[in-house]
Image (cartoon, rainbow over all chains, first blue to last red; front, side, top):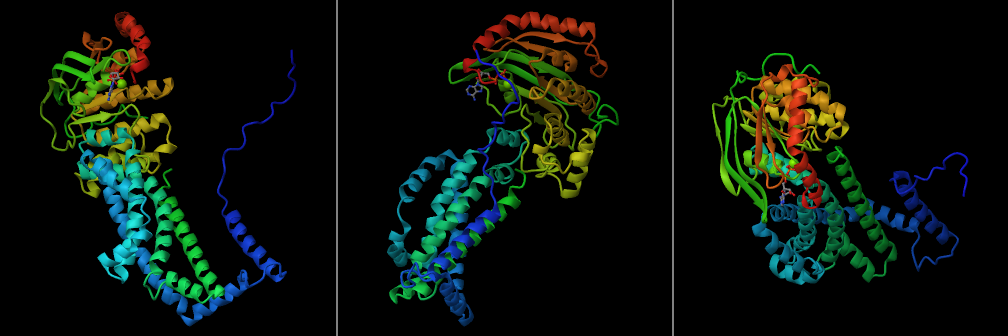
Length: 263
Length: 274
Ligand SMILES: Nc1ncnc2c1ncn2[C@@H]1O[C@H](COP(=O)(O)OP(=O)(O)O)[C@@H](O)[C@H]1O
Ligand SMILES: [Mg+2]
């Protein structure tokens, strides 16, 4: 026999992690500060890893000379065009796969066969197909973005509750209207989650494509700096990529908050 | 909610207009599971048929067949009658789980079925009208998730009324709600249906709902569902009271009929999703 006396202890906490923007920013700033402190205490030789301040100075010089913008603008254009092309086709094909049995198995078989191929390995092929210029770079990004977008969109369409589609049919809505007003918005959360993946893929492929036969672009800049063992410039390029990735993730977060505010 | 007062809904649709629904020899099976057999039924224009029966006897399937959402394995459903010019979807559903789009406000949910047909201004006028009728004016801009179940189903009926249907098919519209909300909404729906003058098939497995809202009650047997009895209730729907001894007696009669079926169906439910 056991007696119970006293207040009931709370045991329902935890398992509900919350996002804290200040903690995210604080961590990044703290890490950079720590890095700088280690360099200043001469615990890490600058040749081994340049200090943040040195990288910052290089970045500043690149900015005022216009050099940075020359490379960044070329990269942003490729990124925007490649990602948009891959996303538009990916959503269209993903919708089709999610809606029509005639397309489902054939397309998904092709996607499953081509998705795992590293698109970087195909760059020479894309150069033959689309030329050494912008075409091959955009194609590399576009193909890399296309497959995961198809998969995310098709999954999102599958997840749209059947009952909502039957509702649309019960009101006699035309097919285009059901797709436009029920299927697409229903799949949007999954599509936006896909954007997080595809934007990172796009940046990785951008740099890879720019390392083959490009004069401008952050990838070309990093490659050149690496060949000269100019570590300050190399890391400046990498910081630019990192900031680019952060900016894109932030933009997707804003899009999610605006488009999915009904949740 | 003052849903039971006010002028009749829409352009002269009250007073026995609406469609006559005729079901002939309807049968249906899902992968060898016979669900419906030899169903013959007629719903007179402007009347309410309450359809009761144990879980899994095929009520939802029958309703799906009536609205053209399920192709029956046997038989035909015919609709005959005049339909008002402003009717945008003659046969219209009200769903058990409301089927609201979570990413649209109340107003935009109600507007959805109007969008392919009406320009913005006409749409707005109609939406405002049915929102007022269902007591939703103050909630027009709310998201569905912010509403109680009862308010969500009010949106469901507002959306259905917005297309000025000639026939309403309601599949257990109250069964996701608590008992008190159910009583309140049943009164409102009875008033709205009577004023809209639509032919209505109202599926329920709550017998008190059936005798409260039906001109006629069709009692189905357990699977494979057939119509085992058809009972007429002569009281005008709007004046009925839940405590009316005649209605209570009718309820008891129906219960006596389906009690054994309901018990058997309950034991069979393993394979029978509701
Ligand atoms: N799409 C389906 N596929 C297979 N079986 C189904 C399907 N829909 C319903 N059923 C089965 O058919 C029977 C009747 O279902 P339903 O019409 O929903 O009955 P009720 O609405 O009277 O509860 C049940 O046994 C159910 O499990
Ligand atoms: Mg059912």
